[in-house]
Image (cartoon, rainbow over all chains, first blue to last red; front, side, top):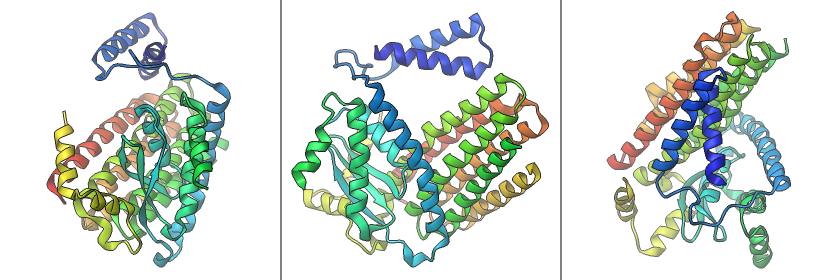
Length: 172
Length: 123
Length: 83
């Protein structure tokens, strides 16, 4: 299933890049997709459990991502125009429960677009994210924001959707 | 008219990114300004152009460019932040505690060890 | 309005170019180049919308991909060089 989605995405992008929907373009896209599927290191979900597909949590995650991208620019206006002493940069660590590499990659990439956070280093096992924040005096709020994002992502894609929520409840 | 206004807003956001890159104190913080403002700025330019461009072919090309930017800018930001952190040991300038440094020092590893790990993993 | 968009993009380009010249470390310069690329790609799209001809839009896709590869390679280089 993952292989089919991956190949379909490649064919769509190939056709978009060439511009017109002709038989030759689609065939070329299928050839490129086949080559990439064979060549991708580590395999694509072969032998691993299939990631679940839950439309409503995925939609909620997508809406949250768009809203956060808009908010990040509003915060950026304030941070750019304010005097320099306003910023207290620092690196914070956020541990996450066990999750697949793909989900960790998705969360890290989304963190690059959310307000105030920028990932610096990722430890895969155990999963810990090290994130550079602009307002280190307010670390706990930033950590809570990151955990909220991770919660939404886990509910959308992880086999165990409530893992982050349990982790938050255990620590509070 | 709508398309042109949206494109103008996108260009303003890119200008905000440039001002941020000029004003922020150090490399890691400048990365913040670049990724967040540039991605959304170019997105607005692409969406505004979608209102103005003549054929569907052009619209899909512009949106494809936006999709690729959205996929690649965060990855590039993380790569540069990672390299810059290990290469120049930013902690000297940070006033607050640095949890990554604390974690690496607690493990007994140094920056040089993590450095070698990265090179061993390289294909 | 499109003229104003061009002017704003040129100002952004000048801003990134200043950082490219001044930036004390290599990381600052690679950030500035990434910014220049985004401004360039935006300029291509705005121009295509201005003259109503989409022949250059494939350039936008190409710049994005090549810029990303260049940035990734320089990031590896920074890590190896220790600067």
